[in-house]
Image 1 (tube, each protein chain N blue to C red):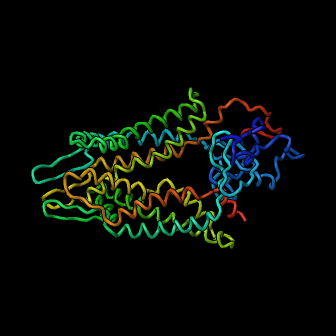
Image 2 (image 1 turned 60 degrees about the horizontal axis):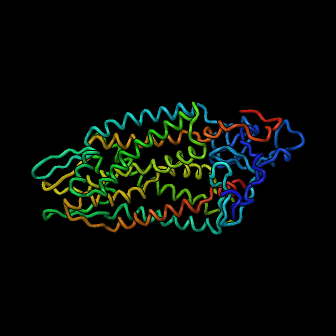
Image 3 (image 1 turned 60 degrees about the vertical axis):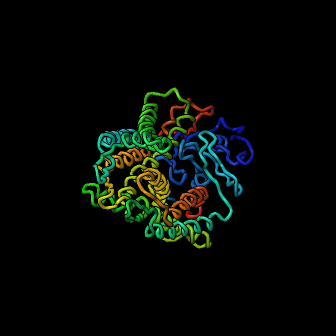
Length: 217
Length: 231
């Protein structure tokens, strides 16, 4: 639009924006009077929180992969399968599609999420080669896709409740399911803790000079 | 996106020339009320209500800021009611049935949640699973109805409606009924060669939920809701 040069942030205008309801208030206002959200021009210690949840999520992700996700007891054997082991098993039986889905949901997406959140947080501190719009998109993808990792936990719950056929076959959840769920929950919290306005703060000064009364809050 | 079709002119960035005469204390309360800040990138705009069906997007980060729809309130309430009915019904009905070696077993969502309860430390997980696929989706739907019903009926907002809507928004990422539906499909394929598996009625209800949740989130214009709660 023709007046894009005057685009300024709430912080540059000496205002603080409510991230929940988009209302703006004078800097220093504690709570949004419209929706009750606590106001921060930039979430204080936002990056620390991101890293803290990120680390806990990563720690939980290790046992989630090493320990069995499912314990299958049949007439002849008891089988413990890990996430990757289960997918390999499926692929060996020719179920390539579903093995791929599981590997994507439980390995590719979680690992990608850890990398993406880390690169976003590092990008705020040290600058990033990616343009801001790209990083914003990356953040939105991480936020959107994060919850879908929970699918594996649900599959375990479904199988464990469904396959209760006495001596013929019985499935029960392994300890990894708990850790996997924790890992998903903590990475979701980590992503939510990230203040995406930080991505845009590093932008070179806009064309228009800041308001005379404007000051960084 | 910028300057094209329905987006053009929907937003005007605030201009320095529009700054009030005494600039020190900043903008007046009325002027502040007319501004909108992008929650993603903090850019400030003078809010211009787009026509129903059109959207106002942030020029910098493309976030959708305002997206009003005609009769959105009624539609969202209808969808929310459907969500409540479906989740409650789907909780009790079996979603998958299995048959192998002459034995059969059907499982409901309640059973799925309780599957973890017997596994010692994973008992917390049983609660979490039940919360994510049953309690939170139902609570969200009820909160949305509570908030929107008075607005649609042109009445003053319900008491503590802002807090209710805030809670509903905070719970949004934690409402996972639609993920559970896809989980059913994956589980089905996973054990298809181990046993005969059938979809139960609850599976189709969850499948419908996937669609409803998308509609619910697509129709909701958060800005419009907050705006009407402000009155």
